[in-house]
Amino acid sequence: KNEVEQSPQNLTAQEGEFITINCSYSVGISALHWLQQHPGGGIVSLFMLSSGKKKHGRLIATINIQEKHSSLHITASHPRDSAVYICAVPLNGGGADGLTFGKGTHLIIQP
Amino acid sequence: EAGVVQSPRYKIIEKKQPVAFWCNPISGHNTLYWYRQNLGQGPELLIRYENEEAVDDSQLPKDRFSAERLKGVDSTLKIQPAELGDSAVYLCASRGVGTEAFFGQGTRLTVV
Image (cartoon, rainbow over all chains, first blue to last red; front, side, top):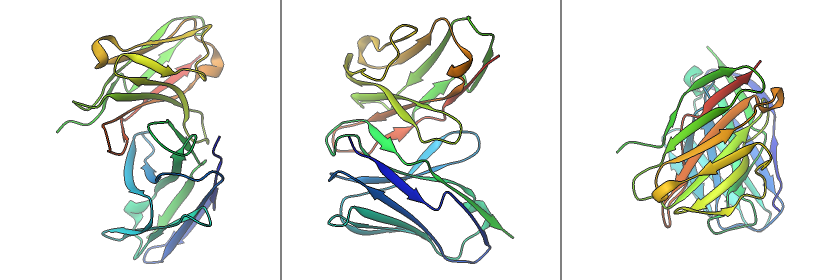
C-alpha cells in the first residue's frame, strides 16, 4: 500500500512569494494528483501527472518518478491561493484503485 | 457539464440516529468512490464501485455502514446507527476511463 508524505504541514507567506509544497510516496505509480481543498470541504483537482512538468496559470507541478517525489509551486502567490493542498497517489500504484492522500499542506497567503 | 453532486452539504444528527448521503457522479463515469476525511487528515477510501459492483469495500465498517449504487449511476452511503466518531467529511468522486478523478463538494457530518 502506498504511503504519502507531504511537507510542510503549514505554510504562511506574504503575497507575491514563490511557494513550494513537496510530496513523497513509497510505491511506484501511474500518476500523481495535486488537489486543492477550500474550507467548505470540496476538493478540486489541480493536476494529474505521470512525468515531467505541468503548468496551469501560476501553478506548476513537477514529478520525479525515479525519486518518487513531486513538487507543487505557486508563483506570485495571492491571498485567494489560501487553501489546503493535497497530494494523492493510487493506493496500490495504478489502475482504477482509489487514491491515498497526504495529510495536506495548509497554505495561508497574507496580503 | 455538471460535476459530481453530493447532498446534503451539511448534516447534524444525534448519536444512534441513521443518516444517508447521496452522490450523483459525472455522466458516463463508471467508477465511483466514497471517501471519509477526518479533521486534519487526508481522505481515506471507504468503497469503490465499478458500475453497480462494489469492487473494493475493505475499508468500509460493515457493522454500521452500507452503500449501494443502483443501476450503476447514483450512489448512497448510509450509517446506522451513527457514532460520535463518525463526524467527518464524506466525499464522493467519480472517474471515467482514462480520466482523472473528480470530487464532489462533500457532506460534512456532525454527530452530537
